[in-house]
Length: 211
Image (cartoon, rainbow, N blue to C red; front, side, top):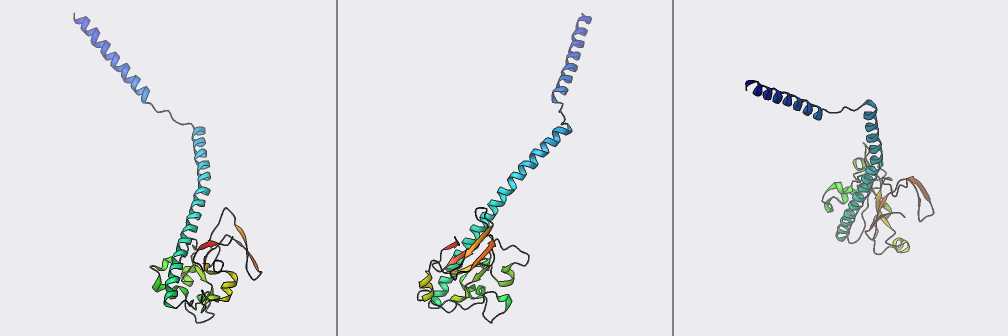
């Protein structure tokens, strides 16, 4: 009888030991070989390479949209200014840092009509010495409109109020449809070939780039 129960206990012990070995084998993690590891890394690098241009395109598009929203806000500020000035456009410097005259900055003239000065900063104006820092605005004022009446002006009537720009990006901060080289054709017959595009605020207060 004793031998019988001893045999049973021994069998149980052996079964437990085998079961433990089976569990250890089942949870054993298979290690990657060097070739497999390099393959995985290569795939990850390839996917990142595909994603970066797409992310950059989204970022540039967001900057352009934000810039256009800013110019819409600047247009609202101009309308409030014109209400107080009896429709006479302000006299302001084109590029105040050059000190070509004593006219004030357009940023200062519109300060009372904007909720924040950041409205005059284009997101694409990202240089260390940005134009926003040096000029008070990322947008250049069309100084030929200074002292003029928008609603009673022969030049505007000739060109058309929807084609007369009031403010625009100082530089070509934006890219559109992956086109980097753009030729601008101006009304006086001159042309300008530049990299990127600019956003414009027109005298009817719509915002666009030059088509």
